[in-house]
Image (cartoon, rainbow, N blue to C red; front, side):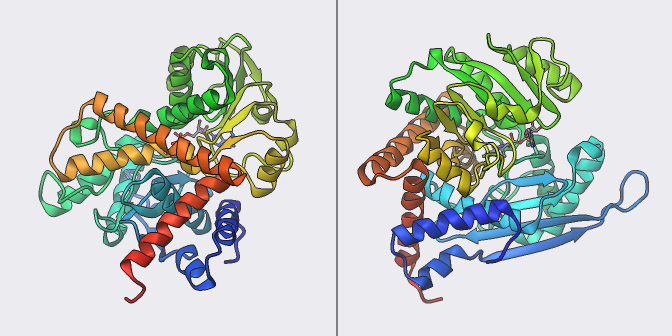
Length: 418
Ligand code: NAD
């Protein structure tokens, strides 16, 4: 597949390498390497001003041997169909690795959310839901939040579906990451960040490091970055630098994460935070730290900056933050990487709990959700780490091989005839 998307080329590279190691024949390689469906939907909802907004939207169902497609909705100005294809492919491996009965999907809405009012965003989300209604459903594709979308948007999706059916609830789970008050699950909005920290704790154990001594640098202070920083603080680890799209802030004694969250809530960015020194956002990858967490966009760790990284290990909160070339340099430099499909899989794991809770009209407690999340993240970390040690692979290679093998097994269990 030809592409200009660095996210898609990273996903294809990682898959091809794994397919070679697993000696998959070309038929199977093509069957599970190609997306099943790539859809572009154009919507033109009426804005409160009376003008029509023209918005391009994308949905990709990558593979569904293990179950219906699962993956978030990305809303950014430059998201495109190839990026969404790469992210959907990643979801196929992530759901497989973390062991939930889902395939991989993703959707995109090409719009910078900071340029619209909450009312305009709601209209666009509802327009997307109606325009994409044939492609969304509990047995087809179940969206969730990703960059630029949040639980309010998921609430509007649910409402839009149930309103169209003339009911208060939907027949099964159409979307995860909803507010708890309308069928969301407790702990979902913290799940990805908590999962990042559980895997980082497991890595500290392997490297014989005390979490309370760790200095952390994080790129991104949205859902994943902010929760990760807050969770690290609970274990005594200090977050010494954070960057967002507007700039960066550093404090060698540790940033006050609660105060920074309040600042970002009112000011919209980390800029101007009094509890640290401003830094250029690109310098986040040059901070001398113990744990580096990319938790923003894709393709951020590149050949340009990888040699300047000074950390003991990397925990990939973001999807596809490391280009394949930079990944090789990290391996040469013996900087371990907890790969995205493992590190940030806590969100999709708890989304699965939300899906089952809604399907069974059940209610889970926070203790149950957090207990299951911690156990699953740590188990899968062990599985990946063990295979990496046994076969002398990087953790990314081991994670990919485990994930791809399970999808192949499911394909053969189903049989190859239509
Ligand atoms: P978000 O929109 O809540 O936050 C994104 C953050 O990244 C913001 O602080 C933004 O300013 C910052 N950012 C964007 N581009 C940047 C750049 N070039 N330099 C510095 N900062 C930049 O998004 P999120 O939900 O936190 O997702 C972040 C990443 O984690 C994405 O890659 C997403 O795919 C991945 N992820 C999210 C979830 C989830 O549950 N939300 C689950 C798995 C993976």
